Length: 291
Image 1 (spheres, one colour):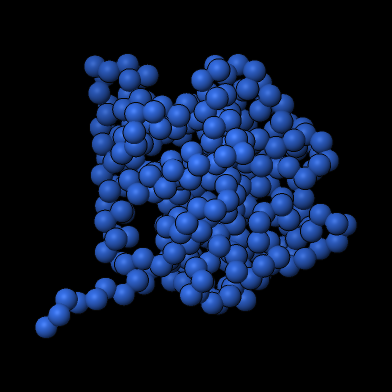
Image 2: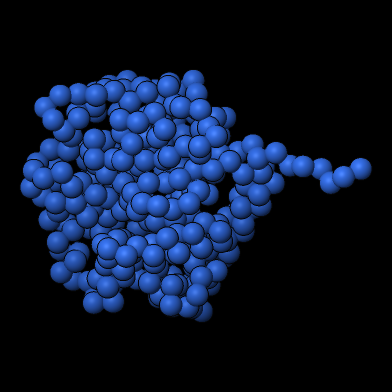
């Protein structure tokens, strides 16, 4: 008998070819590959927890040796702590006041950041040549989020961007709801409704972002918001850093950290502000929270 063929049967959100910074390309992969990656994440999480308990190391050394960045986010005020939107409710654009508050925190963090962190942000997020973004995110996914699977230069770039995002998380005092575009594989059916979602995106399912993730506070800025070949992930979190503008121009960019565990809480179609004084509707908005 010949070797048994393993059918690709789980949708891996980050396994596809990276062609844009603010799109995650999904791909179907074998069940055993996904299981191996889940086990690797568990092993690195345990190792990070053990490392944190080692009092013989300085905090800086423990952070350098961690596989994934420490979560420094916090929201003390109930007024500033938000729940995910009601599943089918209207998704409004981020208000001018909310842009200004987040932008002020961003400017404070950037002004205090060392040149090495600013250069890491330029390399990963704004350089016209996004080869570093592709290479580093591809390797982060391959290594299940473990930064020590990267080359020494790439590890330094990643951890410098980690620290910049952590500085924002330390100063931020509110929850964010942001949107991430997930492009479906070519052999996958259109997302016409939440009934078309795979088992791996049903409520209660765990999702991991091994890579850095470019998100947007406004759904209409998110690539594929008007295309059934894309799912819209709606993430409610205190993690990440706002890189958008404070004025009325369409730029509410928000970068989520790597190594981010999430859990699906629901999915539905929903209307949203389309940025042209009207509204549109997306058939498959998948809601997630930190897990």
